[in-house]
Length: 495
Ligand code: GLU
Image (cartoon, rainbow, N blue to C red):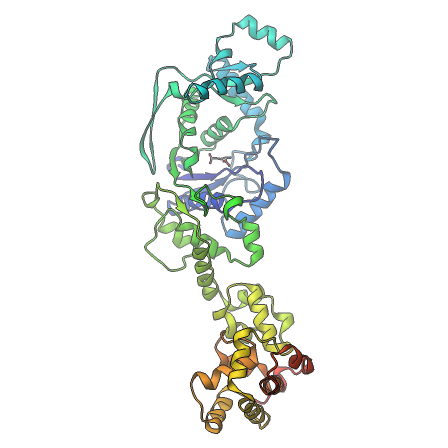
């Protein structure tokens, strides 16, 4: 029986790009379902036509798929509760509006935005939370008819029962109690005829058989209203779990303005989906494992009682940490495509390059930089590298270039002969070499990098360094003289 299973949902409003805060809601909803052998539903909440962006729905589905958050029910998949875009569900909603109006649980409201705003101001000034004063709740049937006939635009409001209490148990916050007198009658259909969020969202959860709603804390106060609606419609309510929000660096809820990035931006920058997922899974939820986990493993170990009620801060450094983990764990062929280095390295060498540099790379850009440093023209020297070259002096590089020309052009051989001839060791032995050959004093392990470089490039770079050290020049001019690529492929190097 399907109703024994867990069904969660992600119900985004397609108003713009999918951001990290939203994605975490989607992720936890999916994990909750999958971990419990249930399924995850996607519903597009696009009834607010003013904020609706047509391209945003497709984009968010693409983003979810890129992350691996595939839905088992929803747009493009089906599932028996079609349609899954709310704007296409107007006929379904109409039935329930009629039912609510017939029973007196809803009434048309003709108040203008100006009148409502005036009322809100008066209430705020009196130190009360702004609530609808119930003006249209008291209209007689004749008055309603007259206004209707005159074509006065109307919203539909839900009549909140007076002097009562709504109780529910939240998955994170525990027992909740709300006095209905604090809620105020709320709009369930806008004047343009579209379904308002509180209504369409709760109704669809019930009609679609959603058992568990996980969403941000900012929705906690919507829940009593939604429960009242479901009660009036005699529909089942899901279990609600409200999670602590993610905050930006300014302490306000994470948004574009304070450090959140869209999924599309992160993908563009080269973040791997598993890095994003592993980071988000640990914001406001604890995992025992500090390893990079697959979606399946994240789902298995997901537990609602491990969710936190407190807000958490977005920390870009943590995201970077998971990116490093994800790159180190990724399979070589995938990394090769991700790095996009094929055009920068001689044919047949890309896999070796991936192996040589992957430990020092977090983003494709960095990988392409290393590939270019190895196989491109002699790379520019950064400041530390310039100092290392000047510090070693021309004699070091003259000796090194000579050794390389003699055929000591593999890392081990070159280092050994230099050690013997120059009587230096340790850092003073290999740092000048690293600086002259790669233009930097840090980076991937030198041996595979040097061995990939091949004889001609090594000689050229060492001669350039000898000249720099002799003239005290810092690269640009000296580099320009020998700055052409040799065109040599590693195949031509002596092995
Ligand atoms: N469409 C709503 C939103 O994007 C859904 C909120 C909810 O999960 O209930 O905020």
